[in-house]
Image (cartoon, rainbow, N blue to C red; front, side):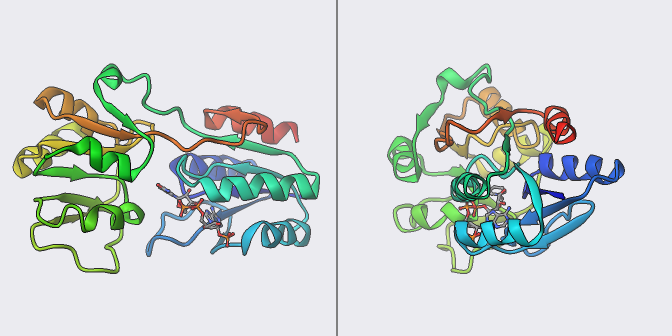
Length: 244
Ligand code: NAP
C-alpha cells in the first residue's frame, strides 16, 4: 500500500523528503512541465495520467491507499481529477495548500482579479509591467501588450517569440528582497502582475512593490472542491499520512 503525492511544489518536495526519511512508501508525481524539475526524494513518476480515468487506473495498478494533492494552488485541473479518481477508487484524499497572500499587509490595496483578462483590464495603461504569472499565462498578454515594455519572469522560456520590447528573465525562486528590488528598479516597473500563489519564496516582490509604490494586480486562486479536507502545512499533512 502506498501514498500518491501529487507534486510540483516546494511543500510536496518537503513532504516527500520526510516520508522517504521515515521509510514510508510514497510515489511523487510531477506533470513534467519544466525541463529540469527539482526532483523529490523517493520514488518519482513524471507526466500526465491521462485524465481521471488514467489516474484511477494508476491508483489501482500501484495499490495506492491515499492521495495527498500538494499541487500548486493554480493547478486546478489535476486537483479536480484527483477528487474524481479518489472518489471512484474509494480512497482518502487530502489537499495540502499553502495559504494565499490575502493576509499580506498590503493586500487591501491590490487590484484583485479573477483571471488574466481581468488582469489586463486592471493594468490600465501601465507601460512597464513586471509579469510574474508564469509561462502558461503569457499568451493572454502577448498581443494586447505587444507595444509595452514588459519584464517577464519564467522558469522555462515560452515556445513562441516575444515582442521586441519584452525582456525575459529565466529563473526559479526563492527570491530575496534586494534582488527583487534591483530587478524592479532597473526595469522602472510601473506595475506588478502576480497570481496569489502564497508562501514566502516569491513574496519579496510584494514588499518591494509596496516600498516603491508600484501598484499590484493580483489574480485570485481558482475555487477548490469544497469537500476535500485541507491542511496548510507539511507537518499537518505528515500527521494525516501517518494516521493512514
Ligand atoms: P493543471 O492545469 O491542473 O493540470 C493539467 C494536466 O497536467 C492535468 O490534467 C494532468 O494531466 C497533468 N498534471 C498536472 N499536475 C500533475 C502532477 N502533479 N502529476 C501528474 N500529472 C499532472 O496543472 P498546471 O497548472 O499545468 O500545473 C502543472 C504542474 O505544475 C502541477 O503539478 C503544479 O503543481 C505545478 N505548478 C503549477 C503552477 C501554476 O501556476 N499552475 C505553478 C508552479 C507549479 P492528465 O490529465 O493527463 O493526468
